[in-house]
Length: 357
Image (cartoon, rainbow, N blue to C red; front, side, top):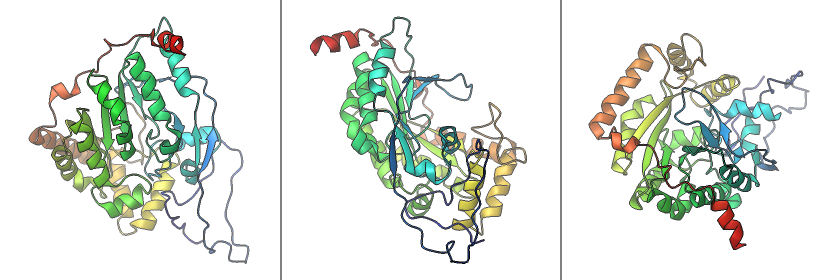
């Protein structure tokens, strides 16, 4: 069987079967060279999804938030390492190429969010926009759902943290600057590597590392607090860049930083292994061996308290390097981790808005 080939603009090399399906598919050579023909470009398909609710709640001890907003499912950025890929199987799709090309969007989510925030028993706490898939992936440019959600949050005076690797967050600087003046927002920009070639292969439709760093500086210029996430750190592939990423973050105005170790749940193990074999065949065995060192001999350990940072000597060394670097660079200031404000929250905002219509 020929090895999977890269598709221009896509991260995954294949479309593995949905783990919840009773049947499986297998490619075979029919004698007509069908497995070696040129692969047609993969078009992005947008699928409208009706929302039952806007806020998603969690009680995970590994996360620093208990609620999130995810206007999109699937992500066109195509990051081959994305921990959210296996969630596409719950929708009946493959976590591989389907995750990048079959994108669900929720146009009614802003209106539902307004209703949820206006309920008498609602207690405000910081909500994370983009906890699963990126709120500023390319389709946001046309759909503008993330902006619509921010407009609702601003109207209610509700705090929000944003996690993205999309430079498109700059389109919403006007809203974010007003919210920042009331201590209602913090932006976390993910920078995986400073190597543009590596980024193009790993994150084919995400903003370049240079554009992400430019976004850090541009947000900071208008008073919006920004942190940089060196995430994910992949043993033997980009981990040597950790300090350089943090230095670049400091130089562009980031106030704080974090990191996350590579996670490979479910189908992601196969997808990432294929990608390594295709793009870095000489390193593949070494990278996977190091990943196993951080996960107790397996490629993934789902236990709470260990999923984000791993265990073992290599993971411990990475944690030490990160701690030393942020202290040296001044990225560990406690005031930059202070909670966002809930003092401005006003559930009557929806009533006032309706009275204007």
